[in-house]
Length: 421
Image 1 (cartoon, rainbow, N blue to C red):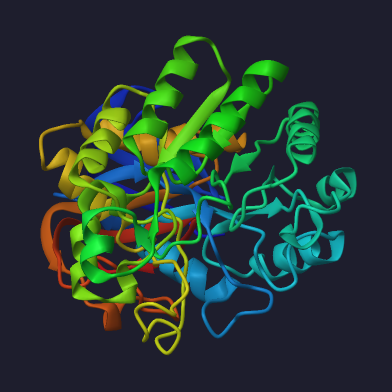
Image 2: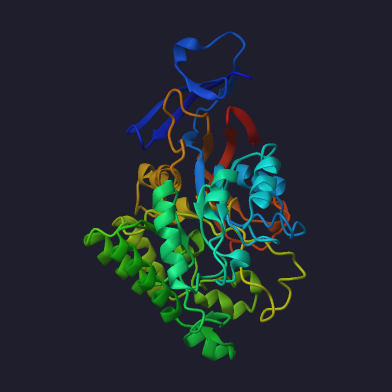
């Protein structure tokens, strides 16, 4: 395996409390002591660039198997690499759903040739239909790293409790799509904009009711739960309160909830439609506050590719937006350039914390750890052009927006998987 010497980067490693200019040696797929550098090393001049541990994205839809016209494991991981993401958690709402060992093995086998580490989420119920529980032991033996019915909530509370208990035994997380399906069903956030457009809205209460249930279960049974894609101020308040009472709850939000609001929907462009929907300015500010005070542990993408023809009709289009190539730059622009958060804090939210939740050896630049690292230019500004992105689908809500910071090089497992230097 090749040897790579990254020279003169600003190195930010939150696990080890490092923020200094220095060098990084990669050898045999791992970070190595600088003293072991040989004359065969490929030297990368990183002056003016910053090195972070490879990003860990806890919420990705790869659409493979079954919907590979939207994305597949290989194309999705190319998109990840271009965004500095080296580890991704692949959600189970594929076709078929990830509810059998065969489907788990299919994904893991295909991912061996991909440009990022792919961790698989096993479904809690067969077909994500909340009617028959899956064989969690069999899924774990096949290689799953987490449990969820993401894409849908688990309607049967007993199935959810049993999954949470089993996951705690197996030391894997349960990630929860928090939504009351009887309250949901709208297209965009319920409020001023939905009324103005005459489009059925999705109330905050739909998300809040789901969040409240999962917190109640985690508290009652003393088992962990990870809350996906938080978008409402009220859900954030509930999570904050639960943490104060010692509930084992972690939570994520997404870059689009940090930068955009429901006002984008006035464009009547389905690329701004996702679930949960873009909310109000009050909710947007609450997501930032939640990240700053530790209520929200992680920034994930909920990367959800759809083909252009599927997104063509504003009201009929499926929910979802892509996000892996823009996630770091968008978060950096809002939080670090905006003076709200240090780069070390951002690296915790996008690398170290998600690695800990997923129980994987990532989120660090420590000697001996797998060599997953990204280099970025903190000064470079770029305007998001969907046609220049690397995945199959182009449904980005950041199109036309100028972001600050650009990923220039990504190394995954000691191999350069993206290079724009």
